Every structure is written in structure tokens, then in C-alpha cells.
Image (cartoon, rainbow, N blue to C red; front, side, top):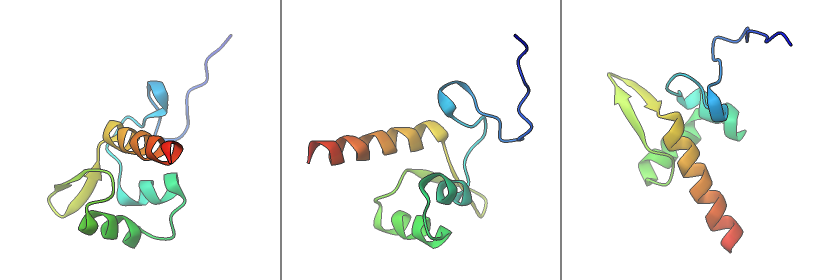
Amino acid sequence: MATTEPNDPRALLRGGLPDRYLTPEDLVTMFGLPSVETIYQWRRKRIGPPGFRVGRYLRFNPAAVQAWEAERTALTDAA
């Protein structure tokens, strides 16, 4: 079987995680949110995934986003 090379520069690593840090726009796409303002509101309220600044740009570690999502899912399932 031949393996196909992904054409998307945002190629995924094992476990479905991107091989780069995520932008707020990536989170909007991943979670189907209305806008990036939702991400910034989550940050202000400290309820979203942990992020960090690179200069003026906000970035997210894919593993931290996945852990945050798993925690939120576990809380929802437990309720």
C-alpha cells in the first residue's frame, strides 16, 4: 500500500494533533465557535485552554488543548 502525503501544510501528527502551535482561528474551526472573540473571552474569564503569547500573537499547545477538551468532556459526562 502506498502512503499518501497530506497536501495540507497543517499536517497532523500521531493522535490527530497538528505539528505546530494552534492559533485562535484554529480553535474556532476545531470547536465550531462563532468567532475568535469567544477565545479571547475564554482567556479573560480563565475558562478556556491555556495559551501563551509570542509577541502580540496568541498560540496554543495542541496537547494542552487536547487535555483541556478531555477534561471538559469528562466533566460533562460526569454530570
